[in-house]
Length: 316
Image 1 (tube, rainbow, N blue to C red):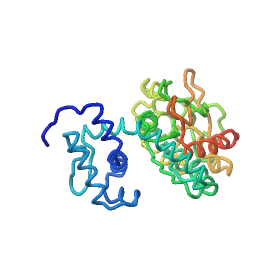
Image 2: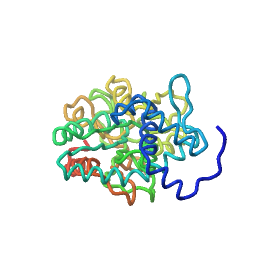
Image 3: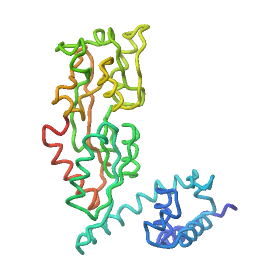
Image 4: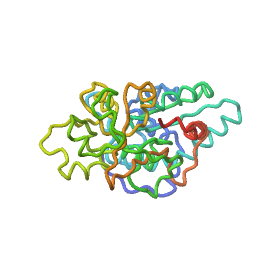
């Protein structure tokens, strides 16, 4: 595609007042012309025509087409980042106008770590759907760092995850500091201990999260100090699998008690905090973008989630 000279501010303003930008954002999120047409209730040819017009006007491709699947080009990624900031206020206005008209339409986009997505979030979403049956919920499972990145880039409205260090681009709406410990079956040899150390844990078969999960950053100094020695251990990138390994009875799993309250209450497994000096707490939070106003649908979900997290049993 032949490069064109930069557009004037007037030309850019005229371009971004067309449906092209809205179509582009939707195609970028779905990576499908057909799905975009379905969501916007228009013909696929109209979507393709608007994307083609946008690419022709900008003088560069925004999508590459590989094996019947679209992929954003570097130019498309740049445009998407800025387009989200431009379309956000318009979406907020539409949501408020819909609320005024009694339509109550809109979408809440959520990114969550696995431990919350498989335990706490389903109940929240179900209750939200009962109260707001016309609202759409888009949930993405990701690592803690990716959750934060998606909130900052406005790819999602609300994030649930662990925060290793403060970030000026986000606000932590709900914050809980969770202890790190060992989860094991009730008949495990260490189940009767009330105060564990890593050295004690490392004397038994154990499982830990792989790098990339936030809790690994907390325990890495103790692993790096040679605690495991030559003993083999299990590493997994799934908190749920850590728990399932603990349920086998062979392994104790290094994790927090987040999301396993039912199993703890039943007595099937026990959680014992690890008391090594210098072991940090794992900070969990519900996060939003700093300075960003939530639209109607995200605000409704935010309020519901806040009321739930105010209850002491939600983070069991």
